Image 1 (spheres, helix red, strand yellow):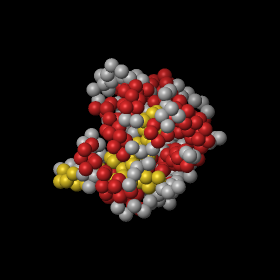
Image 2: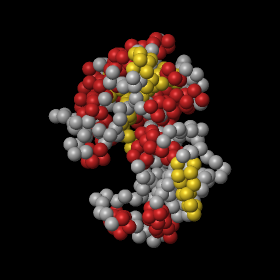
Image 3: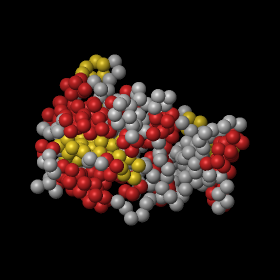
Image 4: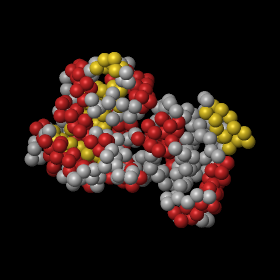
Length: 410
């Protein structure tokens, strides 16, 4: 079977694309992303790692909601410059086999709805799936992969659940997705990612290609037998993921590295992106209390109530949620989120000698990015793009399962 032509929508820094590329079975025809920093990182990755010398044109930085311009190309835009558009790239290969990606999940996440005064009902991101749908409808791939948070199953920005609207919309343009999408929720730690991360992986089949009356049973077979065979017997741990990285311990005075101050030593030998961010003396004191508590086996501060009490004691403030979490060496990490850039208090390194939150490289490893993916940008940009990404290890296994799936069609 020749290489499978793909488009990645809402590509970010390319977690899905990187995993698909690792198989050697896919050709990335185009990737669409609107934020500048992830685009720059993905372009460099496609060029330096995967040999796409024309990555500057394949990675399209544009607002996907301007769909007709995305298809046909545009010029001299104040924000997005110029591009030949998707049609030009697709015409070079003739057809698109698979479309992958997932609209931003904040509007569908339960955490997002809790924190927003109107439950995210007015958030434009509720309907970004419509732009995804237009691209699928235009290029008619054999299947698509739509990744999102499990909260999409309960999100209700209007009078109906958004998932019902999405399923109905895809059916109208000729695609069938699993009827009971609870069965499409994956825990990526089951697939070897050293992190507890649940996401919904919606695979849609073009009814004309697979057979309208067969799609449901074919999809059940994909989830139950084809994809599931890539699960691991033993979950990967934090220690396996980051335990070999050089220690970063507090210094007596601050230093500056690449324009950013830190209170920790630089890694020796040097590991790109493995530089600890600055932490206040108060935070370091709290980290010491929490990590030594776990190392000693006392476990005085592992309950929510104890953590909230410690926060009040140390800061003088009251919080409805606990602010701190120490990673456990012998377990997968907790979720690596986009908002890790804010402070890292819920991602405290488990070594009491280091008293710090995790570095960019540690976050990347817990998301299963290879060390040769060197992230560039501000801490805010880089932590955010890593947290938003689909872990490449899961993406690779998903890509292998889809290859098996396509190859098995008579």
